[in-house]
Image 1 (cartoon, rainbow, N blue to C red):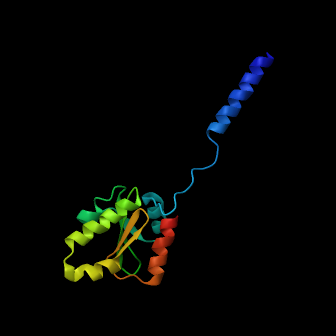
Image 2: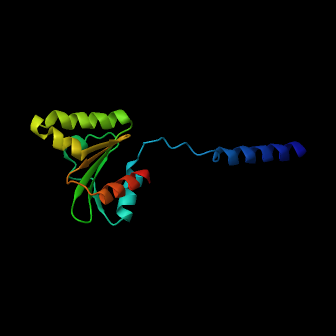
Image 3: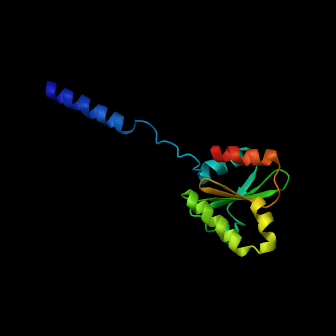
Length: 136
C-alpha cells in the first residue's frame, strides 16, 4: 500500500513537472507573425495578408500588409533566421534598377528575421509603433 502511494505521488510529480519548467528563452531579434499582427490590430490598424507582392509573398514564415492610421502602408515579411531577411533584401536589390537603389535602402529595414518594407516614408512615431509590435 505504501509503495502504491509513493508511486502515485512520484507519477503526479512527474506529470506536474512535464508541463512546467522554465519557458523557452526568447531568441533575440526573432519575431513572429501572429503576435505582431495581434499587436498592430490592437492599435486599430488594418492588417491583411493580401497585396504582398512577389518578393514578400515568398517570406518563409509569411508576411503582412499594414495600413497605418494616415493611410501609409508597410509590409512585414517574417523569416526563420536573419539570413531569410537578408535574402529578401537581396531579392529587392536585384529587381530594383540602379537609379532606385538609394531610395530602396531608405525603405527596407531588416530587423533580425524580419524585413520591414515601408511603402511610404514613415515618421518616427510610425517606426516606433511597428517596432514595438514586433517586440510583442
